[in-house]
Amino acid sequence: MAPVKVFGPAKSINVARVLLCLEEVGAEYELVHMDLFQAKEQKSPEHLARNPFGLVPALQDGDLVLFEARAIAKYKTEQADLLREGDPEEAAMVDVWTEVEAHQYRQALRLIMLECFLNPTLRGLPTNQAVVDEAVEKTKKVLEIYEARLSEHRYLAGDFFSFADLNHFASTFYIVDATPYGSLLDSYPRVKAWWEDLMSRPSFKKISANMTTKV
Image 1: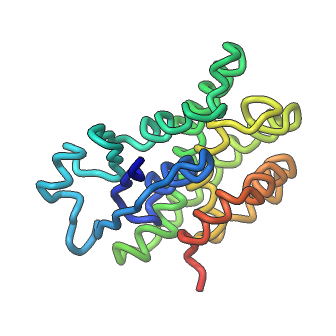
Image 2 (image 1 turned 45 degrees about the vertical axis):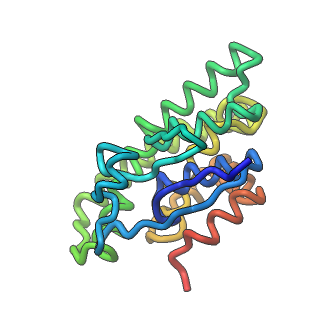
């Protein structure tokens, strides 16, 4: 069976989300790099045929073409037990914490990444410290909730590793690796232990090696 193709740069948060899931389930894949900033290949007719919104990633699996990172990741992890679909209560908790990542966790971290990493390094824009300070306070409130949750369970959906944990990888990685605010986790020992646990997994190590901003 031919490997699936993933279109987009390895350092993209959403591309990394997909690659991590593919690694975790042991799927064969080919990464087709795209230049988003100079050539703007995501806006080419070829890519718009894959994703009409002109964004990454897109995935091609035989005749099937998908876009939207979370949908792609869920499609592939259905082949493993990461969605816990055999147990309705566990599956529901996976869904809950997957939604929390999308609507609370990533939204809290997003402006820190934007102002401390993406704007200065990729767009040549100065950091707006007032925006960062507000985002840090929001992040602390979210991390307090995560600390409470992880004091009860080893992982977010329960005492089992799941799709919910996978979805937190890229945003957390960039906060730790590419901004001055990785030390935020130090104040939340359960969150830090959870993150270190995740980063010990072979799939996390492999994908993070291609994302690091450090020389």
